[in-house]
Amino acid sequence: MERTLILIKPDALARGLAGEVLSRFEQKGLKIAGIKMIQLDDQLLREHYSHLADKPFFPTITEFMSRTPVIALCLEGLEAVAVCRSLCGVTNSRQAAPGTIRGDLGMSMQANLVHASDSVETAAQEVARFFDPDELFSYEPALLAYQYAADER
Ligand code: ADP
Image (cartoon, rainbow, N blue to C red; front, top):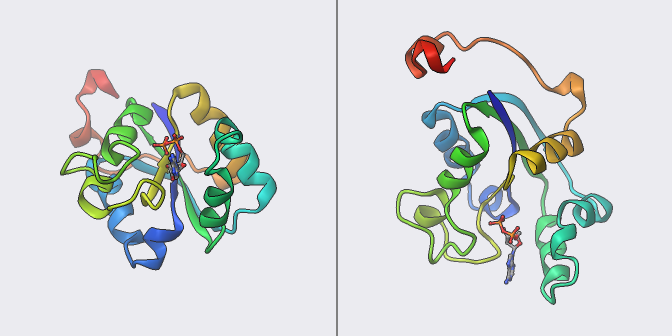
């Protein structure tokens, strides 16, 4: 099973959509391995968005992402990284497909409700960046046998 890092962004919290966003992942069958609310500071944001540091819009991302606390999730499942990315939809919410979180709930490139790690390697780094080991939990969901076939578990 893979683990991935999700952030429910300030726009989702401000708009009362945090539960809806979490629900999309839960209903799909992702297991919550970790969950917490966190106020992102400049240093954490610079690390997290280092791939965008030279973009002209970078200062607006850090301002937006620190406007309110975010909800950090570590989600677990088979191919969880790719599954979560596809549930989110493409970065620009206006272009995101209907049925995805961004496609159904957003209109913005920046205020796009949710972050999801973009590769297995990034996910490992991001989970470690946002969660201490004792904040991550291993447990067997009661319905696991109905979520996956025996040879998938
Ligand atoms: P994603 O979150 O889909 O993986 P990126 O890693 O490219 O996308 O960008 C990180 C975040 O930065 C986006 O989710 C979005 O909030 C913001 N962002 C990306 N591109 C722009 C842009 N051109 N203008 C404003 N904000 C942007």
